[in-house]
Length: 342
Picture 1 (spheres, rainbow, N blue to C red):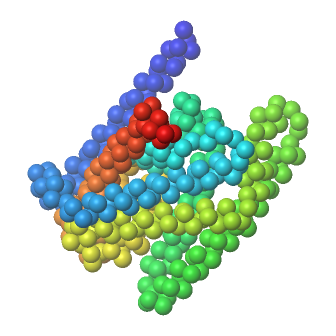
Picture 2: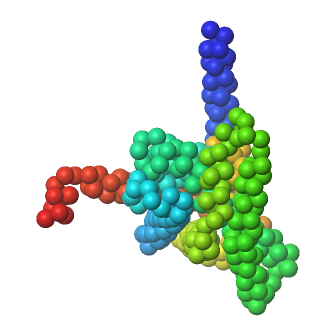
Picture 3: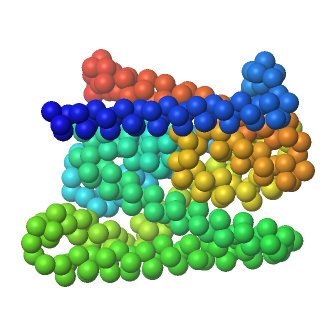
């Protein structure tokens, strides 16, 4: 009874804490709308009038972003277990990733994707939940490397404010550092961790880390071509997000703030890793507004952009999930399969 009571109290505390954080999120959004001098009707009208070309571009870029994340995951799974026949299909894997991205509106994106893929493993998509989780964490390491390089590039750009030639040099240096870390340092780090685990006493701890040791050894031995491909896809993912943001700015007639927004994006992404509120709702919007206002935008236009980013992102994810679920369902209609065989 005491254990059950303790569990109930813990659940109540989590629910209360989640409710309070949700209220904080709502309060931050309400304060942003008020501070920006927006009205809910004006915001709804602006969203409803979102340019069709921009919405199409957003859908394509969101699909490309999630597709690249899915391909990275499948590449890691197949590289670590090439002889296994239970690899998930691309549609199932991308549908799982899309659900994870939707969960990312309530928690950090990386955590949402990892949770969705782990749960998917328990219902037969991919491997076990543990394998799905481990491979997800590994493929996300390359996103983290690219993000750190982008953050360093942005910090240098803010201090030096380089001209075009300076930008080219900075980008090339960042690309070189990313390639160096992903191809040389990361495998060496993983091999060193595996070596440390191999030297642990052969006791209960050894048994619990045996699976981790095997996985680390395989990851450290991935071919340079696989590591290069994972890095390139992470760079392309980041590029797709950058273009996504610029497209939304263009749809709101805010092209002039594209460079400040791109420079500030790493800050937004890093803040997104820290779950201050559910999905950092309110926190992300205020950060976007601060970046644009510091670049000369009015509070009204900055707040409108920040809120539009959130809404359009959710709409794009829902549309993609419905589409992928439809494809998933069609693939399992017996008549379709019979027609294919004939």
